[in-house]
Length: 390
Image (cartoon, rainbow, N blue to C red; front, side, top):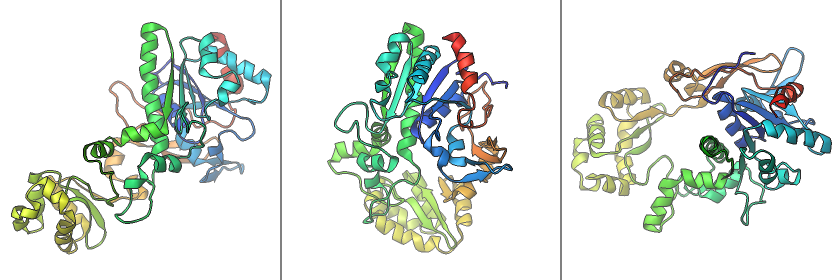
């Protein structure tokens, strides 16, 4: 199989990944051309292989589309980590690796002789990224961590949902993907340092830390005021009107984040007097009185369907958007134009779709050059190829 030459071509990655955070980091590297080999236990592999939707091939074998969405462009190597001989063979393979990505609980791989200290002793250039819920040390290091728990711990759930409502997690597993994104970013920085110094690094990437990093506006608000952020539904603590409203048929969003845009909103709804109302005279006042502001605007929005309001605000340059579900956004003309949705063939022959690498880089064309792997599909192949380098 011909592998496209991406910016990470020639980089070899061993991924000890389960579920989402580690596999997402590995896939980001694979999408850019790194040779990513996923290490899986032979009795079932990554637990996400069992997650629905499970689609059936002509021979009756099933494959998880969830697993496929995070494991394209990789190879799979099956290793029984309870078998000392297999672990030793895998350790030798680590001599050929540039990067290790793992999201086991802290200490698990070290007990097998596959921790950073052990591997860096035989491969000083190794970049070893450990992705975990809470980090490799500290009072929570050994706590189990799924995305919802870290969202709760991080404060993200405290400012998500409707005002006065119960706790609501983000519908997308932001903890997992924030952790994976930070890990991939730091891996590239560490590889740059290897080029300069010949010395690898251990990256301690926690989902909790990643979510706190993503929450810069909310944490800075607390540092400045001493008051923690609260849920506001679709509204914003410092801007208004900057939220969802209901058209006569369905909701839509506008984001009038400055005085000019606020004036455009007033003109669009036929209420120019609101622009001079002292309650809404500046951004701070509008944010403070946004409940009253929304109550004055909503009756006007209820008179027309959302598409007419969106056309009007687009004409005026006011940021606005329909509230899509995934069936709508994946068929959106802009998404089609950008070419983000790609066909994907599964190991059982089923053809489906996936969202590919969504960032453009000049001189590089993203491609799905390897379908998601069947469990252990490349075990012999990888040992044969990488063994030559080790």
